[in-house]
Amino acid sequence: MRKGIWAKRGFFEKMQYSEDDEYTRWCRAQGYRVVYVPESVVTHSHNYTPQQAYKRSFGEGRALAAVWAGKPTDFNFTRTMLLGWLNDIWRDAAFCARTRRWRELPHAALIRWLQRRARLAGFKDGWVAYRQDAATGSVCPPTWAESKSVV
Image (cartoon, rainbow, N blue to C red; front, top):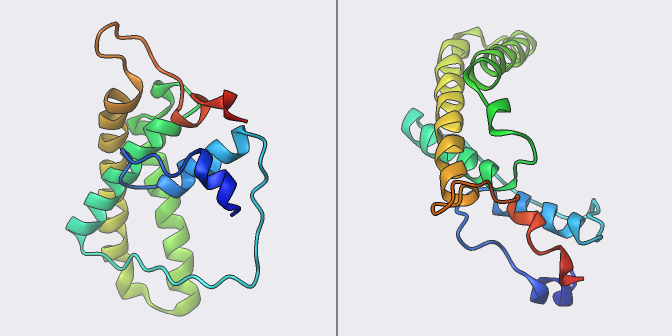
């Protein structure tokens, strides 16, 4: 990243999770391109306990509310939790079948359920924290859309 772009606006410091995603959205909204650099090396692990998985997913859901371009009602129990969880389990079952690790599926199902539940709760909390004007009750734009005049 060019230093001049970062100087215009760094990470949204109120956001504890997914700040890189929010920053990428801001960059794109300013007209910058985000490119893949195959030489880059990243090591990232999310091998969490159930409690850690819940906490992280809550934070990610909260952060998602800050950048969500859709309606808050699009993020609901049926779509986010139930259908999302079933899709997660389908992918995890396919992985377990490929790797012959069926014993891991019950634990994966639990972790995925906690992640989905936390994400929905975090989204609701984040909507109030980032998007809902406390005085008027009106909805504020996504964080990345607020400062479009910077460029």
